[in-house]
Length: 136
Figure 1 (tube, one colour):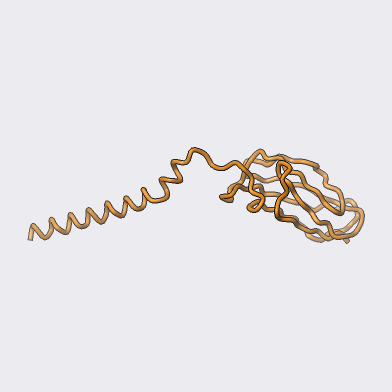
Figure 2 (cartoon, rainbow, N blue to C red):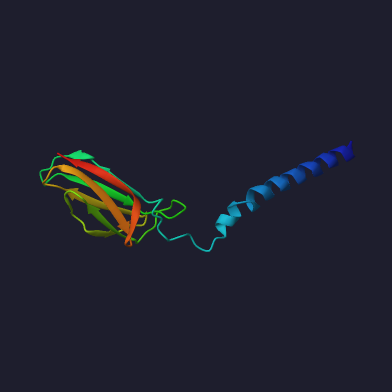
């Protein structure tokens, strides 16, 4: 009986060591030992949002346009210069630098009606995404 208990204990111990080795030596250690994360902005992973999408063309109403500059892993990239352009209306802030989360917040207003196609560029590289806002 003592030999069976010892055998089960050794089998359990080997299974436990195998499980722990798999959990800690597989991928998480690789992530923890990286020298640094990518600080290069990705034009395909970065996002641009606007709200509201429809507003009065009175020159006073403003829509907020948020640009999230992200790297290839989808993480925010701080301290990047973002420039916004629009086909209708005017951008209040011509250029902004992203915060610690990679976010830049712009405002756009228009005195003339129409659909504004809004594009952003990061460090003079255009983003692949655009957004439209309707001014009535």
